[in-house]
Amino acid sequence: MKSNKNFFQPIFFISLLGTFFSIPTSAQIVNSVGITAGITYSTQNWSQEEPATTEKYRLRYNGSVFVEFFNNDYFRWESELEYNQKGVKENVTDSLQQVHTFQNGINYLSFNNYLKIRFEMFRIIPYILIGPRLEYALSKQAQVFPNVIGGFNAIHVSYAIGAGIEFVSYGQLKFFTEAFYNPDFTRAYNSNFFIKNNAFELKIGLKFQILNKKNSCPAVHSIT
Image (cartoon, rainbow, N blue to C red):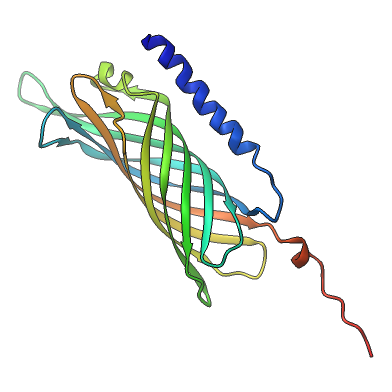
């Protein structure tokens, strides 16, 4: 029964990716498309009972492509595919009581969806992003505790709260920067004890704004 579950989880995630790529690109629906790149500063909380043990943070990388929907001045919806490298540094004490530091990592492909709340100003547009992420474990690296790292769930759910600043420009290319707090909602590992990821992200990005047809044609002035 367990093997069937592991088989269908990736298929479910791939079907969601297909939905993402089949989104209609009508300018009436899609406001803009873009890319981001950045760093991820992550740890893991290991718990069998309270209080949980928090591992040392590890600095890694992330990158994404996204679609922003609708043209409302204050509210937008954003869907994103993100490659995100998470992991920890583990301190292990040997038989001579010497402490050694090892690195473990899990690389995720996540499907993120955010409500975007914007505040338009003269030179910048600050905004808030909040929403769920569905995360699929692409690969795992373990310098220590390989049985635990290898047993992480193929799919789990996290959520993200972020803030960003878009720099106002007159062209269709827009630059922005974002920061996120991204803790797990469901467990990334559940066996004889439980593990949840906890991460902070810093991103820079570039998006291409798709103009509506009514804005894409130059105005015609009559001469009298």
